[in-house]
Length: 313
Image (cartoon, rainbow, N blue to C red; front, side, top):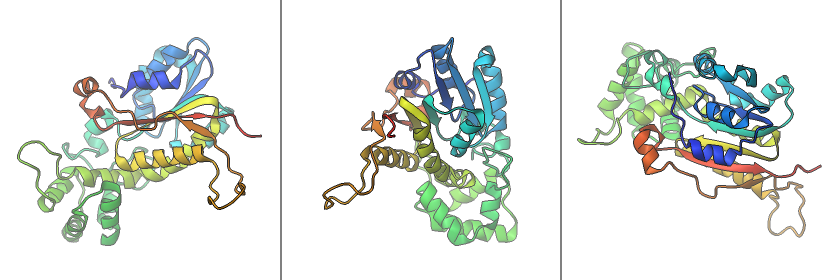
């Protein structure tokens, strides 16, 4: 199975893949970006390929077999980036890529439960070693918590109606499949326009996936770790696919760039914080119309980049 990497040329340009140093792909997936990086950093560069998904890592190993001596594979969440690199004895890296969200392979596999268009179990886990599934959330969480998840993680305006419908249904029998949930959501959410528009269950499924995998929490934890392990001049690239992720990336980058957080009334800095990065993308980069035509799933992608400054002693 192949993967069409999003904003590939832009990623390679900003990552500055010199033929030396260590690079980290925190969400290697099927290895689309990783393959291009490896081609640029040979003969002496190396890549650490991280993913929480066992199946994705297995496929990446196959797709990147030609570079097996140059790749170290790790099954882990990127929220444990520092721990992972420390275990490998890596102190600093030349570049880091975070390509967030689901891969095409995960969406297209009914058994993973990510898609409302393919009947499968309500799973939605990236790492199937973790116990919490989407079925657990919809069948066990209190109604007020369901409303919060749908509203905050899916920006779903019909959150209250959907949560109430879920609770009514599960009192009769548990929700266990993606099509059951999609039909239930569609029955109470605002109907889809006659032509075009997204499926009524799109935002609800996004919200559940984000909650199951604690995606926003993981991202918030991972970004400071990634910045810390970059060597001076090293770059961090993040590809996000919805506004909640992009907001976290934007705010984190700006915070690390700003440094001092003392009130303007203070005559001198008392907090001691210094600027640690330079943000290279004041506005997120977006795919071209040509790329969107070739790969419609790239449509919502937003890319932000920062560069590590000299570390203070």
